[in-house]
Length: 287
Ligand code: PDD
Image 1: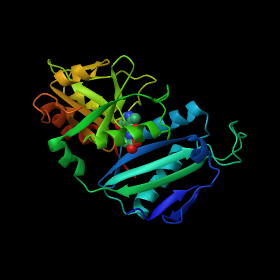
Image 2: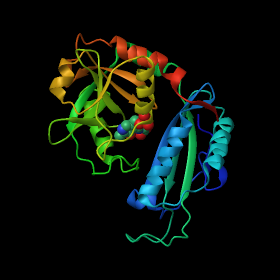
Image 3: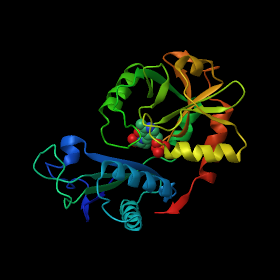
Image 4: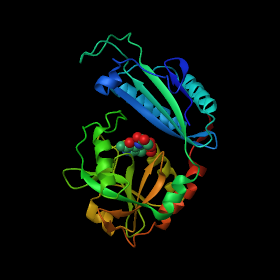
């Protein structure tokens, strides 16, 4: 349970924690976020998540609310005050509050910073990975800067809802050329007939996933071949395996796409191998 939330310099009780009604995050989605896995009370890949947070802020010219060292202190406090052993840390930075105006506020406007932590049952995703998940493909109707981790998540929310209504856990966005960009909240991968890991190259149409980067480190350490290139639904259906990666799912096998099975419809060995090796390769640090 979340008991305490950090909001702009104060640790507040969850039920009472609040931001300004004219916060630009609320009015314009003028805001970015990060989700970091907490495992046995430790942070997973914090350095990469903080680097991406800094990049998102820089891309939108939002002032960093504090140094990385100070952020790590606050994150640690939030984890301890909520007694989280396994779960996630969610952090959001907005451009701050002020009378509603499309024009950016003066440079002195203080950004809003919210950090909360939530417990999750240890092993839930490992259990789900035993059966894998279904995905539903949906035309990608997001903006052209999906590499920035903004809270402008309505297309993802609606895509996931459509996926759920079709019995799938995740949506795969498909671009105008028929290629999969990424999941609504994950990066998409397939395994080719010769055992190569295929995932879309980084660019403005996908989020540079931290889990994606660490899975690449795992793959290299395991001597697996990686091909960064686009793939479509038909190729994914002919693939040996498919899976998604994210801080919450780590490596999650995809066994069904739009109602058709991937390979024999069961999780494959490479997704399992990457998943088992993941936390041995990821950076594990004190919260
Ligand atoms: N989502 N692509 C999108 C669109 C995402 O929202 C996410 C993560 C990823 C995977 O990134 P990472 O490996 O750094 O978690 C890819 C988070 C978990 C969320 O919105 O809850």
